[in-house]
Amino acid sequence: MTGILFLEQSLNGLQFGLMLFLLAAGLTLVFGIMDMINLAHGSLYMIGAYLMASFVQATGSFWLALPLALVATALVGAALEVTLLRKLYERDHLTQVLATFALILITNEVVRLVWGPQSIMLNAPAGLTGPVELPGGMRYASYRLAIIAVGAAVAVLLYFLVTKTRVGMLVRAGASNREMATAMGVNIQRLFTAVFALGAALCALAGAMLGPIFAVQVGMGESILILAFVVIVIGGIGSIRGAFVGALLVGLVDTMGRALLPIAFAKMFSPQVASNLGPALSSILIYVLMAAVLVFRPQGLFPARG
Amino acid sequence: MKKIAVLIALACLFPLAMHAMGQYFYIGFATRVLIYAMAAASLNLVLGYGGMVSFGHAAFFGAGAYIVGILAVEGVSSVWIAWPAAIAVAALAALIIGALSLRTRGVYFIMITLAFAQMMYYVFVSMKAYGGDDGLSLPTRSTPGFGIDLRNDFVWYYLVLALLAAVLYLLHRLLHARFGRVIGAIQENETRATAIGYPVYGYKLLCFVISGAIAGLAGALIANHTGYVSPSLLHWIQSGTLMIMVILGGVGRFWGGPVGAAVLLTLEEVFSGSPLLGDYALHWQLPVGVILLLVVLFAPQGIAGLVKKKSAFA
Image (cartoon, each protein chain N blue to C red):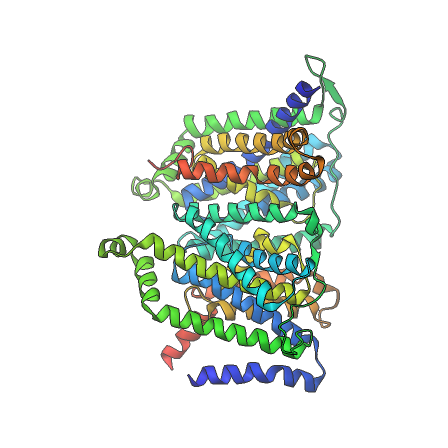
């Protein structure tokens, strides 16, 4: 029984970690290349999920709505970058915090005005609603497997984009030394807009895929934003590889901790102590992980700047 | 000096004016502004003067509030025990968190202070004996003895005002003493301060602890003011709000914290409660967000900076 539970929770953790990676990848690039703290990254995730809900309703098909939501959110992201965020790159981090915090307030209210205050439930696409039997006799939700597949595919795609293409080379150059990249003739401004749009599209993908699991509601971006920040700090700001490792670590540690710690405590302590201690420690676990990583590797696991 | 006398006189007359107009609600609102002014001023000490961007200041604010709440539930409601306890616990928390966090710098310092604050947030969420997620109602306001009743809104307002004035005076003296000069030197150039021979780490830690202690006092006050404490006092949004107050008012400007707190809370009040706006008052975050953005774009030094600039031309 515990073996199956363990396997199931590992898959859940993997699935959550991969979705975190989609968010963290965009965040770490914006942070690493543009040296910009973007608190509104979570808002793009929310906008993506809401747009997805609307497109599903309009087209009646999950897989038709998905690319539409990605493109639309990328356009929203690019528009934000061109009109507003571009003005903030030269300002200090505190100003960026204030401005993007204001953006959170604004997007939350705009979403509430457009879609109403109630949360929306997205349905899993037809054909992926039931469980499947895995080798070994375990039953697992097919939709969650689909999320893992999509997340892994995107991670591989991103890997090739960043390491094997010309655009990826420019992105890496920008992350490791922005001034030098500009001096070598890279059009940083166009690159920034492209990176921001890509980050927005990845946010939308995560929002759309997680929609059927979590409710689509105002404020969904804030809770996951902090997790994404934890991921990129653990991984090292500006590093896609770091974001990937950090996301999987956080996803697994968080999910496994929540599932297994209470069971472990129940065996060690009295039920009263266990019911208090278990949830507390499992929620704290990822922050302890981050603090520990920072104590031993103050630049994160994979520092982008040498 | 004259300006400060006018400010104090206005603050003293405010409740009387509200009393005359029968607007008792605004006495409570003004008390809340004063409490947040204290919390924001404490954050400005580390953020503006110490150059340490702490994204977990709500931890100390919330810890102070919870100590008062927990003690009150356990039957200890004396001001003379509960408030020093709140300050001491907040200072101790700041000592531990600061000692570990100050080993990192820059963005990593921001994130690690956030991480510690989140840890404390979840500790209070999981304390089922003290309300857990739902929070904790205080049976009564703290009692100072000497026949003073803090449940009287006027008495309460003047006490909070006196405490805020005392804290601001203390901060003013501190910043113009040797301590303030050293902190300024460290913020300007840490390497140079080390080379001159100052114990940089110790000064920064002391600055962090003083700031945490003041935030703890502000927390003790807010617990008494609302009669209720909940984990949301420690949530990162609360840390962010305190930070927004400081940035809005003016980072590293003496009146930055109080001005920012007053402006942000007033904006919230105007746009969320106004009968003028009717149903649109539900969407108060929209105008507040737009105004914050305008401040970023057109007043880079915050509101206090705006005033300074004007008077330079006059």
